[in-house]
Length: 554
Image 1 (cartoon, rainbow, N blue to C red):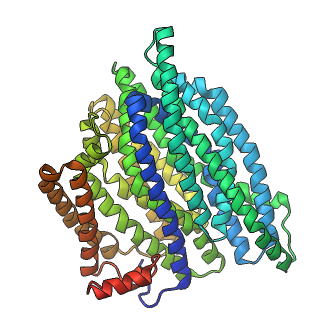
Image 2 (cartoon, rainbow, N blue to C red):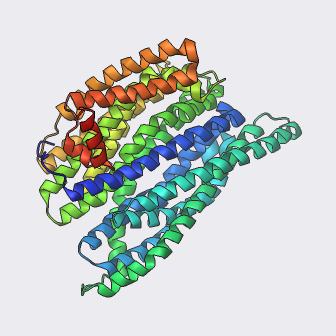
Image 3 (cartoon, rainbow, N blue to C red):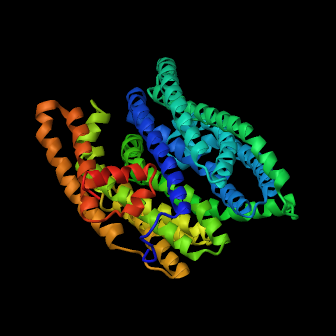
């Protein structure tokens, strides 16, 4: 934003970015662990099994919106607002009300998935054998409901460390259990194939084993947060004794506010995420209409298990920054500090694009060696082309995720719902003709998904400009990072090609990525795309600034 000031390093903004960076780092670690365990998982259950796994997860994620995904945002908004006013008694009552809500909606969500598994598997998807993966995911919805409450509570307190720790523990347990359970159940499925003279049970049971790991990971994360909360209770009790506020909010009012906060989040996030399940379902029915239903599970497995897996790694950074941005904006709005609101929005936009743009370029130019590194031995030709064609999705989804958080943080909760519905309808208008008329196969999913993210960016930023009456800075947020990323991409591509024949794919790819990071960083500094103030706002920014000055780069 044009209102950004260059002097000094505001402590609040710095802390907000540090917390966001902590969550971003944990998000990257989580995604990397996800990539590492998906490699053996895909080798165990194959692309077809990943199709079962992916479709089960698409249903699971929609049900999580009701019980879990909306809770961290809603609870963090409510807690951060009371904390800004010193209302610690009301903070405790918010936690109690949120846990009660989680109990109810978590149970309902788990029941819907358990008892509706056959409906989703046979009627919604032309993939009946994903019923086993769906049923093993059902209990996880209940666990995730409580997990979302405690994560939101700590985020509202202004610390992302408990959330970051729980995410890493969750993913580590998930990775280990998923691979072990998938391998064990795949073996049982092979025996079932012989008994029932069918070749589907092994992949279906293996996919169910993968989803068991999701539940065990969530349970481990919940236990960790409970331990951390028990350690925090003494501080909370002391704060409650010091609370001088006379007004104690009744649970009826708290519940009403929570529902009023949760419902718009649920609706916007549901529409934002339901495009995945609708895309998968519509694409499957289109292939059935074309007589290509046998290809469906394999194509969905490649799309979800490889393409989206890699795309989601850099998007995790924008999601993390958004999680820290919402309570920060809520406090700034409550204090009626417009300059702070503008400053935080400008900062999160800059950091998001500084990562998203080079990530998109890097994924495009190194698509083939990255797939060869991660999925050696597989036929990756289609996945490579998909990633090259759809790498810009990283930029669009990162920016749309942040813009959603901005609108929610400044209390315009309904705008993302409207924008997501419009984007959803328009992107479906591209998906169907591309599949049925142009016959581009799985690329219709790639381009339709990219269009959805682009439309969300456009609609959300039109609303932000209207409500905040400020203009988005273009040169240092988009133009210069793009120029630096193009040179970076050329350097990475050249290094990888030059070294591939000498030292092999794995080492040449790692070296190419390292060179890309160095080239991009130096270019950002030389073109004055990153200021000293912005570096100082990063975790360890003071030491980094001193190092860069000693190298004559700053």
